[in-house]
Length: 321
Image 1 (cartoon, one colour):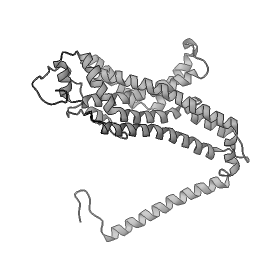
Image 2 (cartoon, rainbow, N blue to C red):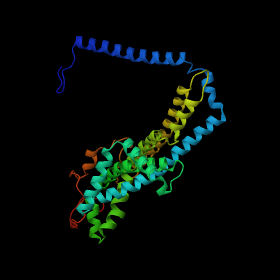
Image 3 (tube, one colour):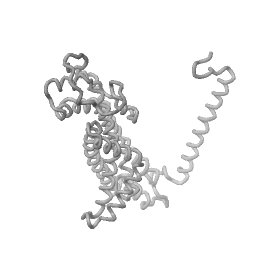
């Protein structure tokens, strides 16, 4: 049988594919067994290696690393969402300079690798440390926070813009028909619905923000990953450094924190789909790409919403009409 996209394999091709699959699986399993055996021969799975977590100092350092990570995440999450709202409104402005400035900001910080942004901010803050009155690890903290804010704020702006464009056009037309100003239409009609509809996607993006806090490692900020690496490099058990136990524990902590946020996004998505509000909720795990954000619900390419359009009092359409 021949499909439109490909030729269905015949009997010989099916046998060959099964052989390739079995050989591939055996190769991967063999590689994993080799790695485990090598690490076991170095004593990485010995009970003494795991006994280090009974030390109060080790547990305290891990707790401090987790708290520092959550502190950076909390500040960066709030600032990135606030920046995203401002950039989304600016992207929909009727004034071309404002729209172009916001577009340039978003495109630049979405294109530049986050690691380079954080590193550049760190160098700048260290260079002007005394002038800015920064002490201790404050330059590392703000370099990481600001880097996460500008990058994730640019992404959140496109998420919110897609949500605003998804609001039925009839609702803003009805708002103008009631005599509301452009600011009132944006703040009381469009933005609340956009935030509600895109909340699962916003929280999913915050999961990315949480994972990206580990980039503080490259600027020697003492978040969880840096703390784990420092302990693994200084603690010696049976003449070996406990890298594997430390990596496994740190990975489990990161997975637990990200699963908690993802679970919150999925819970909000399920509640939103059950609610009879007429607002379509975005999927919690849906990736947001530039093409997603450039297409509005009415299928128009992502230019600004024409909020100056005269209201069509007699027109049908939106839920608000």
